[in-house]
Amino acid sequence: MKIYTKTGDEGETGLYGGPRVVKCHVRIEAYGEIDELNSTIGIVRAEELPAETDQLLGRIQNDLFAVGAELATPDPQSRGTDFIQDEDVLKLEAAIDLHQETLEPLKQFILPGGTKPSAILHFARSVCRRAERRIVALQHTENQQVSERVLKYVNRLSDLLFVLARAANAIAGQQDVPWAKPNQP
Figure (cartoon, rainbow, N blue to C red):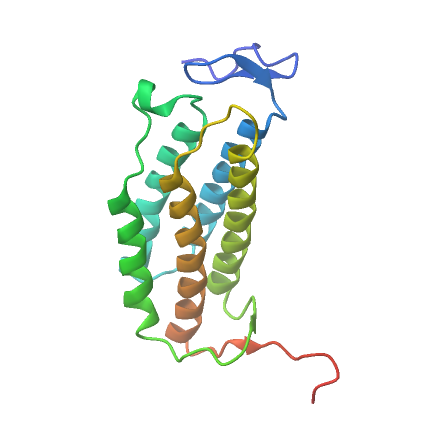
């Protein structure tokens, strides 16, 4: 399979089962953000992580390909790319609950950072939130369909990435850094 096709040289790309659109189309932006999120998760997986966390993130990377496929398809149901199901959202919620149980309750906002894996997970969380905003923009664009499950999945994923960032610090014995409000000691 050739990597370059030259079909995008004029600034357009084809949607799966749909028309060609400009590369800055809101649909392309949405699944492009998901691709960036997936790459960011790949970076954190290059760090030393507990095996369970690495396996969870590996599953999420596969899920994100499914999210991207669904977003790249104007009519996912007719093309069979409506891959994300309610169970996928429930799995994220279960992972959040499991990891949250091991953490001290938050009493204030925390700054992104601590250990390197935690910092990368916080970065992934912010990329996830940006992807969520692009998906909402797509959802609010005339004649553009987006599954509610995809939006729920991405929303829960950002919560999970936050919890995993905190867990990465806890595992390393690193305290989360509290936000110091301006003019506070």
